[in-house]
Length: 495
Image (cartoon, rainbow, N blue to C red; front, side, top):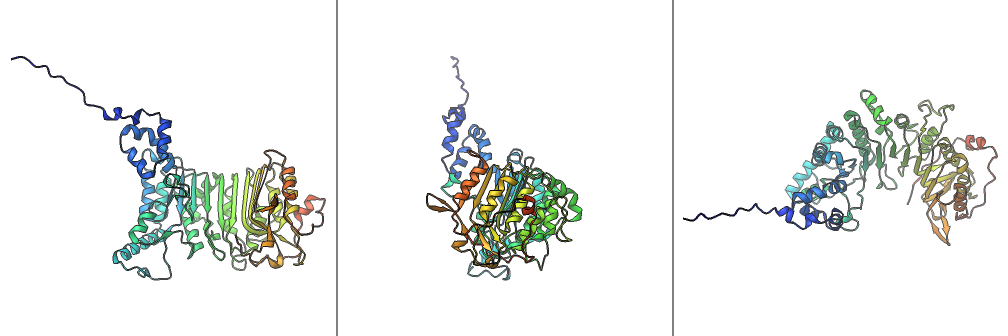
């Protein structure tokens, strides 16, 4: 019998044989950038080699910044990501959305108008109960603290009432929705959204309080805390109430460490009538615990009392040697590193705003004013005077390091007409080639700030007579008050 030699061959390495594996990584990334999220997931599942090559870019796109909502399902995903051996280091920007089931909270939990399916009604009840339990029992704070404490590279914690429409991979204008929002909507056959139409301000206030408490408990040290709210209507209190900034004594030490490490703070505030709350002193204390800010953004809700924002900004503009206006006010604070100041949706006297800019002038490089109205202190409603030209001309003198001034949707009002809605003749626009523009930017990229602002003033589309020349003494201008002590009336802001 003749021995037969048996040829042995090693099994074919199908992954190494794949042509996709041998494509240069930059080409592979270009190809996969053009496919949908579903198809990208399929590509990643084809082999370990492709998964390894794409992982860093995949985690950067889908896990560097991620949005969640107040539901156990969504928050558990955040906790799981925070405890993942590799994804936890990728997540740097956590967004907590105001999304929830679009229900009328004045109705009983079991009352869902138009809902015929018992299973949908059952799941909707569970969703509502889950949300309410998280908000009222401390579950939200506990889950957030568990997640924040396990994210080594957490930089930004963000509260939003909108979805960014930048998920271009899945079509132009595709939104980044909160994790679990689509699942909850399909399970209950109900809409899930920002819910700004009911219980608006109190809900955002409670949400912000739970988030900041979670940061203190977890000993997380983010560089940025941001609150971006866009959906409040003309009569909405969709903003943070003063109570949002209360710090319980047992957390004050930990919260102080969190705020001391902040570099940027973006807030949307709702300041109620001064007869109810004479001064936003709790907000003042919160701000005083964040001395190292380089970027401060303060927007105000549409129905914030006009005197409230000015009162807060007047306190913020106080120098160390000046005394507070009311007994409740905190001592003056200094932001010695402040480089950018953004203000939006308020009515303010020009001298108050100028004094505020002057205080931070030594370090301020960027000033952004959007939907800001300068109130004319002249009581004659028939004498229309536009104070913007004089205000802008003084900026380079009080803030010599300004490099960028952004202006948008400006207007001016008189004290007597500040209560009504915006009219076309109230708007302050800029004429460029004969076309009015609502946005203007003064930059030192090409010319000096003095010349950039002078050009902006030339293009101001104003038909009002010039004001009397400002005092030669700058200190006199900054310290001058109004003609009387009347409070500004409430503004009904418009687009």
